[in-house]
View 1 (tube, rainbow, N blue to C red):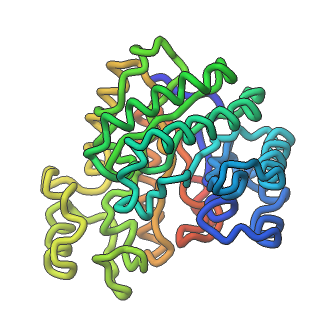
View 2: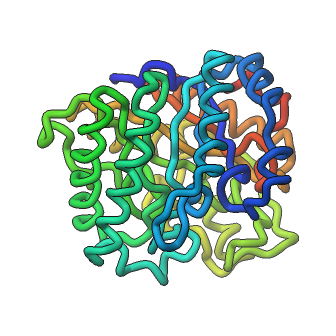
View 3: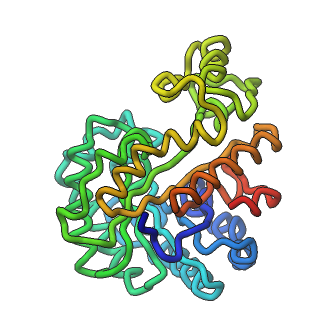
Length: 336
């Protein structure tokens, strides 16, 4: 399978310029230049940089130069330490993945679509000059029903980006929280005669394990714990016994006898086939295990998922470098 050069092994900088209170103190202290040196020394070749639009643009659409300066500084540090950057637009006017139920109009509202394209026009004009920068169009489209509208908007946005950035890689994810199971529904880049488009997905399966005791999950309990590996059948039994069947949709569609590496690898089969048929790179923009999990079980999951990535030649960025419930633990680094 094709790969994206410079985006083999990386981590997310979530919680720095996104999903947080964007105070000057937080921005200055949460991630510093030393972190970029550390990331490089860990053996990573890139970072995924989530950004929320209020960092660099007002509600009225006026530029906030101090916010752009924060992104500029990240680019400078990455260039200094030889790291590539995946610039990820995490929150935009009219759409935020964590409030997706309130954001259906984003995909059809002409004004919101135009503003989204205008934001990427600005970002690509400013950062398309760097050959070590790639663009991740939008974080986690949730609703399956907007697939066609999202494909349309993504194509329009890419055409605008290409006016400023001819060769930078552009990543497009599918619906259902950027699921690996919806990669097949993303438009084919061959339609646009663009060979620098890649398919992005996020992978947190089995969700019942990677998000155990997560306080933001509606169907989760704070004392819930589950090991890894178990078989699909065993995870289903736990789901229905302790969580009223929550997080069972993927499991119910899977071979009940599978477990561990074989279970994870099976969930990649369809997306890998689609990507190979279309000659499009696959890239995992997020994956990880919540810090509530037993470290030994977490390491077992990381070993297996990294083996799957290596088998299929898939680049990735783990979630997350610092905090957000998924902070990187250094003992996991050898398995990146």
